[in-house]
Image (cartoon, rainbow, N blue to C red; front, side, top):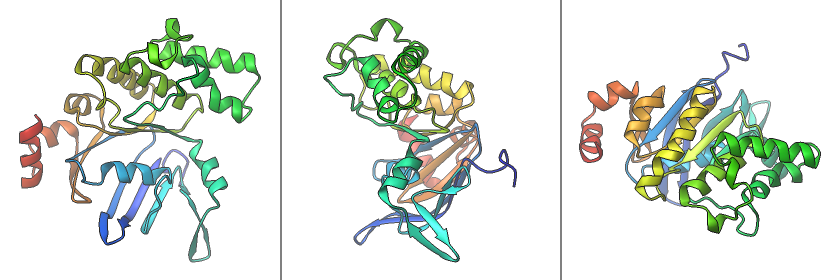
Length: 257
């Protein structure tokens, strides 16, 4: 299989439980390089848990998850699979950017310092180069004029855009977004979605857990509706949203559209 044919994300029968609570039930899906996948569904359906499994913030109980052809968090020897040392799993995670509901910026650091921090810790260039790259990323998310602001002096939308720039600073091959606009005031949602649309147009592979159906319709290559830890329905967003085939999908969309 060539590099371009290798899926960026491949989930094969992924299951996850917390005690007796089975949160993910044999999830299988594929995201090609450069595609945008949107995950939608009610709270508690397993969307965020699945996202966290992709970069091994959560371990899986069964199945396999690969990113760019490599198992995530595990290594295979013969026909047996072993969990990686946390240090090795953390190295893998550098290639996977993640943006959470909450911005998690360091309050004592400026926007510029927040974006520079991880590359600086990993010594990915000298200070001048790191600063130039961070300024470039802040400009990309529309915050060139706010580089010296502390998080407390930025709006929620601006803080989330700094968080996106921070994730991009590690030059990830895959970006994961866990309901990135759900903590924002409604009038600030658009500025974050605009940045994400720009990323999609640039060819970034993205998996987005979202309630923003307009964004999913406009940007996603595939829409996956999850409920009860399973994939209920998937397909081209416009078709799923306009003509859902499953009764559970119809009931959900009738409440959110």
